[in-house]
Image (tube, rainbow, N blue to C red):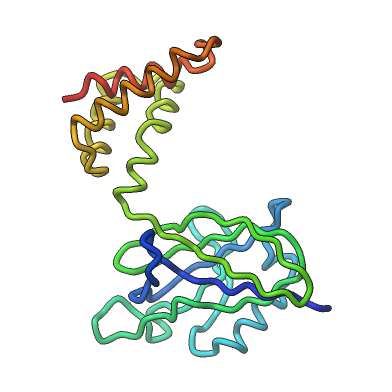
Length: 212
């Protein structure tokens, strides 16, 4: 069977390559939600031949994702200054199709990259850049939707304020910028006629507005 090739690159959010990674757990799912490693076991055989020193194997992690693990301390790769680090580029042969791809990066912390949707045809090479956001960026993207969900779950204001205060600090959002963001979001909601649809968003934003 003819396959396509995924050229996978591991990058920070400034587009620089991640040079200090010592283990990564790759997830490739079909657009129907199935794990490629289950549908096409040959992927492991191919990767084990291509990267024999990385001891590539299947790993089911705490989130029950069927991941393809590269590296790790048992292979001589590790976080120590004298231990080897992974090349931030992998080539993976896959059957033609549509895939959702992401990975966990171990480089002093265990962090998930963004997910990428990619389509590959027979004999085609496709570049896949997996971007690892900073903790600050993750916190900024997390703050408002997480609090809206918390409000939907009827979590009380005092607990919400604690979460909002902590996440805002992790996100390193300046108080004035946070106030401006709150004002802009409330203005956007006010322009929506079906206000009840966004009631949890509005409540959460008002909680954020009260934190000091």
